[in-house]
Image (cartoon, rainbow, N blue to C red):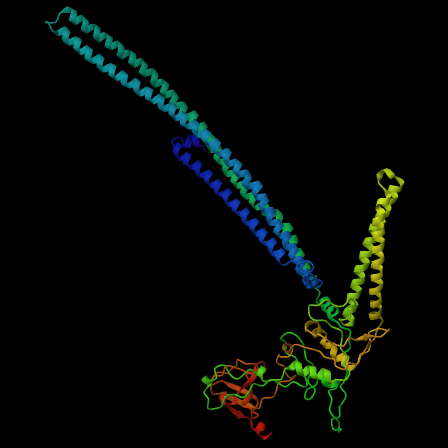
Length: 602
């Protein structure tokens, strides 16, 4: 199949087709270019994502990365960074191997196409010129033949006319002969031109045009092959990075498999272990003796009834009740005759009715003749140098960490001193290289720094030896207060009698006449729950809708059925429960109560 023989008369269509082929190639180049831009954008977004979740330097997040799960997450972020790099490689390779190469090839293809079709148009113009020459020769031969016939007819007419002179007849005869000669010459010229045109036409359609169209065909076929090769390269560029991307994914899987939940649990113990022993049993206090009752160490009890459980400071978490704190109950509700719309905002806030808890806590602290209180600081303040505000186990870890840091600093200083000493020896042996006295000042500074660091190490090692040399048996009161360490670090405890340490490192108590611990009332304003929910004593039906907007109350809808857990004690409030987590007080006049028979009998 040859375009020169099969498409000899389709010059214009071939011109349009080859231009379409170049347009297709340029469209593919544009497609690959946009793909490279997408790969670059995707890689950039992946890098930004990885950077966004990287731990910030010198922040608390760095401490969190000691756990295997967070280390695995960090490894995932690093692998995603490498993963993004492979997409950048895809973009770079496609740009250099496809976009750049095809762009240059398109320019060359346009020049070659232009040259071929220029030759084709030139051949067409030549054959058209030959055709015009043939047509002109033919018309001239035809005209001369007609004029020769007219001259012959005129001569014959003149020769037959007896009235015409002999001279006129001779003149007509000569004119007819001339016209015949001109016709013969035109005939010869027309024959020669026709033979030439036929030769040119044969060469045009069987030699020149086939050669030109063959070159155009070869050019088009090269374009088709080139775009196919580019498509293979397009796939190969992706295929080349698949092994590396697979390694990145394998590393992510390996990091996930390295997560050790037992190890992380152990790290939590190491991070938060205080080293204290749990409190022991509570001694029985006999209140039948005729003596004034004083608040004893049993005030912080875990049992129910008279001894409520310990408070938990800080945050919004619900703690146990102090022995001197009662469950918040709202103030008396409006009269039963009042409509619900008369009290749109509900009863007065219980906070306005109760005695300030900080005052009760201060009463409790000041009424005790002796109280053991650990040294602490306000939240956000810098801790003491010996970390005495921390529990023994945490203090030991901090001291050990400080000793290790100081030893590293000493090693750095000693390395610098050794390097300078060697330099000084070189200067002494080769004075032309430098002045040995120039490093004496720096050596003296390093010696002083090393001595200071060693003194610091001895100081912290002494404190560390005190901590490691004992974990003292503690009094019941001190054991119970060990649960307040977190509260002391997160609450504003302004003044407290500091512990004194005996020479053997054990804690001792110091008597305080007016030991006062000021705790913000907001730390105690949270609602406290008993260890076990109160039993249900009946049910009730809401007669009106009540919006429980104040603390201690609960919202109910008209017609809603609820459980009664505490009946009205004469203050106009009934305590109800919706489910295990929702309970509170509603005005008794807002509900219709149905007590169980057993509850009534009791």
